[in-house]
Structures are given as structure tokens and as C-alpha cells.
Image 1 (cartoon, rainbow, N blue to C red):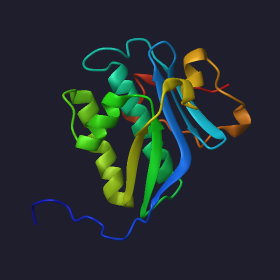
Image 2: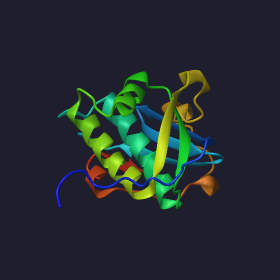
Image 3: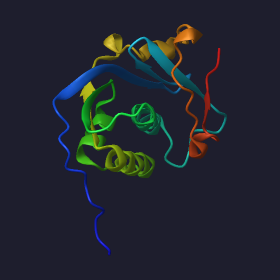
Image 4: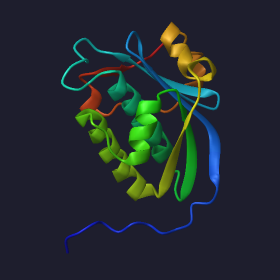
Amino acid sequence: MQGNPPRNLSPRGATQDVDLWVDASTDWGIRLVLGSSWNAWTLCDGWKGKGRDIGWLEAIIVKLAIQTLFDQGWKDASVLIHSDNQGVISAFQKGRSRDFQVNLCIHRVEAIVMASNVFHMLSYTESAKNQADTVSHGETGSASFCLTLIQLPELTPFISLYVQ
């Protein structure tokens, strides 16, 4: 049978604010904060190029946040993710971007959405209020609050898990 794969029609309920924040910095790397826990990745030499820029970094951290929720077993839910990048928020809302690399992130996120039936609502927040923004200043937080370590093989040449 060809065509679109089936969608799960289980109810998701109201959107939940689980205190999930994402941010990217071309000077340092990317970070996500989930409640009092966090994960961060630093940039590898040569990360930038072939469509990989700040928009790609912002899309990658959204993807890693969604992967984190998936790995934690979230299903049949609607979850709020806070970001300070309006371009990436718009691209995810439209389901497409002019940027090929961002489109790849959106495509991979859709595979997670189909497997988990978790809708991800991206919400804009000012950088000054973004709880994940401290990574821009090299402040990561206590290692005792690190989330489960995630390193996706397709990202290995570009980002490296930050370990204190």
C-alpha cells in the first residue's frame, strides 16, 4: 500500500507547559532546559557550511528537545517548547523552510510525531527571558541536573555533547 502513513487519532489533551526551553549560539553551541535539568552540545570545527547556520542550530535544538521527550516516553500529548528564534518557530509551524537543512530537521521531527502522537507547540520568548540562553555565556549549570545523554549519529560531525 502506498500513500501517506496513518496518523494516530488518540486525543492529545490540552497543551502542557513542561518548562522546556531551547537556544542556540554560534559562539558556543546549543542547549535545552527541561525544568531543573539540562543538556548542552558544543560546536565542532567545520560545523558551519552547506546550509548549516544559526537557523539550522535553532532547528537542531528543537529536534533534540523533541527527541528528549520521545526518549522519556511522552505519548498522546501536546507540549509547549519555548524558543527565541521566530524564523525556526515559523518554519516548524508551516512545516517547511527555504533552508534545506531546516527542512531535514522538520522531516525528522515529523517521524517522531507520528511515532509518539506528541504535538509540539513552539512559543516565542525574548532572549533575555529564555532559560536556555545562559549557554550563550558559557553557563551550563550543575552536572547533577543533566538529562539523559543524547547524541544522534548524523550530528556527530557538527556538535559534541558537553560534559562537565
